[in-house]
Image 1 (cartoon, rainbow, N blue to C red):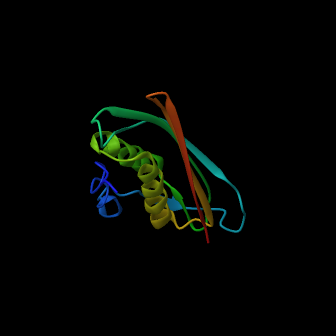
Image 2 (image 1 turned 120 degrees about the vertical axis):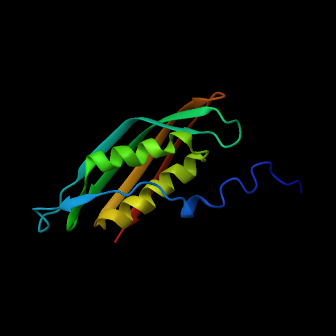
Length: 129
């Protein structure tokens, strides 16, 4: 079995230090409701080719005690513009960091990546408390 040329490229993604995601106090923690946030201009770098990848990142969540502050989310997503990262890792990293920041009751992150080489990728990850 031959070794992949991708080997070792993504081993430190979970430890990647991205900007802090701020939160604010939810005034309706007694009610289940869904917040949807779309990031239509997400960009990162393909770790194999070094070329840019473009995606729409959609975040849907039911808050508990806190909600995501949007300006800090903007700085968070801009951080990835120079990061070589696989599509699957983008979505899972977003989910991990967002859940850690706001501790929602439920969250779903979807990355719909533009076609590259004739292949379009959509990745979805979910958290349930």
